[in-house]
Image (tube, rainbow over all chains, first blue to last red; front, side):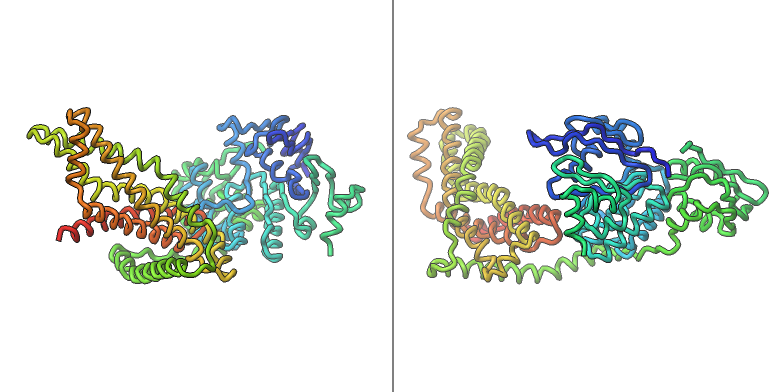
Length: 247
Length: 361
C-alpha cells in the first residue's frame, strides 16, 4: 500500500478566545487508510475535523492536503482542493428546499460539464449505493434520521472524492443501518482507494472499519495506532474507553 | 496519477477507449465521439482504460444503452470491471415523481381545505375566549407574571416605533392635505381632517399593521418553534392545555396593550398635524387645538377603539393558528411566520373595510 500522507498537520493549534481546543497537533493521515478519531466529549474531535477543512481557521500551524498547503482564506485555491474531498456532516446537512435527488446532483451540476441525463444517472447510482432510490423525489425533511445520513453520504461521494470525512456517521442510527454504512465506507475504500477520516464513538463501528485510531484528549493526541494496540497501550483513559464499551 | 486525457479511436467496427474517463474528462470524450458513425460500432474495447470514476461508468453505460445499442464491451481489465460493478446503474431505478396538481385542481384543493382552516380557527377562537374568561374567575392554572411579561413585549417595547411612525404619518397627511386646502383658504380644516382620520382610521390601522409585523410574526415563530421541538407535546403530557398556557396570556396582553398603543398613535398623529399646522400653515396653536377638540366626538373614539380590539384578537388568533399549523423543521418555522404576517395584515385591512361599511350604514 502506498504510504504517502494525504493530510499532514504540523503543529496545529486552535484557540477560541483563551480556551485552547487543539494543542500542538502533529498528525499524518495516509492514502487509502481509514483513520478513526476518538475521544470524549469536548476533546476537540469535531474542531480537529473543522480545522483540517478550514471551517475553523487554526490559530497556528499548517494543514497540508494532498501534499500542498491548504488555506481556506484563498477561496479559489481551496475550492479546487475541496472538490477532491467529500464531507458527511453530523446531521446530514442536506439542502432542505430541494428533493433528495437534486441534492445529489448539486455538486455535479456546479463542478462538471456533464449532460443532464448523465448527472441523473450518476445521482441515481449514488442513491442506489446507499439504498435510497425509493426516496429520490422526497424532501430531506420527510426522511428519517438514518435515511438522511445515508443520503448525505451519497452526496459526499457524488464527485468520487479521494478523501472522505465523516463526522459521527453512526450516531443515532440503529445497529443494522450503522453496519450497512460501515460496509459502504469499506467498499469505497477498497474500490476507489479513498482515504477516509471518521469521527465516531461506536465501538462496533470502530472494530469494523478502523485501520488506525487517533485518540484525542484535552486537545492533545493521547494515542495513535491500531485497535489491538490501543487496548494494551498503557494509557488509562484509552484502555477504559475500550473496556467500558465492550460486551 | 498521470492525467491522461481520454482518447477514443475507431477502427473497422471497434471503438478503443483509452486513458482516463472521469467527470473532468468526459465532456472532452463526448466531443471526440461526434465524428464516429453510430451504426458501425459493434464492440467497445476497454483494455486501455486507465482510470474510471462513477461519471465514467455512467458514460460507458450511456454509450452502450443509447448511442451504440448493438455494441458489446470487451476486454475489461479487472479493476475497471470492479469499478463498473460498484457504480452500475442497472439495478437502480427511480420511482416516478408524484404528479403535480393542475391549476384548477390546486384552486379546488385550497377551497376544499378551507373548511378545515375555518373549523380549526373557530375551535382556536372558542378555546382562547373560554380560557380567557375562565382565568378571570378561577385562580388555578395561572402563570404568574405571564401577562405582564407579554404586555412588556407587545406593548412597551413597541411604543417607540409606533410613536415615531404615527408622528411622521400625521406630518405627511397634514402636508398633503394642506397644499389643497390652502387654495380655498380652508387651512383650519387640516385640524379636522387629521383628527378624524387619525382617530377613526389611520391610528388603529397603522398600529395594527405594525403590531402584526412585530408581534404577530413573533407569536407564529415562537409557537411553531415550540411545536417543532416538541415543547407543545411536552406541555400536553404535563396535563397542561397548550392554548391556555401559551396563547391566552398573549391574547389578554394584546387586548390590554392595543387600545393603549392606539391612543398613543392617535395623539402623536394629531401632534404631527399640529406641527405642520402652526409652522407651515401659520395657524395659532390655540385655534388648532380648539378646532380638533370641537370636531372629535365620543363616537369617533369608540369607533377607533372598538376596531383596535378586533384587530388585537385577529393578530393573536392568526399568529397562533399559523404557529400551531407548522410542518417540517426550521424551514417550516420560517414559512409559517411569513404566512402569519401576510395573513394578519390582510385580515386587518379587510376588517377595516368591513367596519367602514358597517359604520356608514
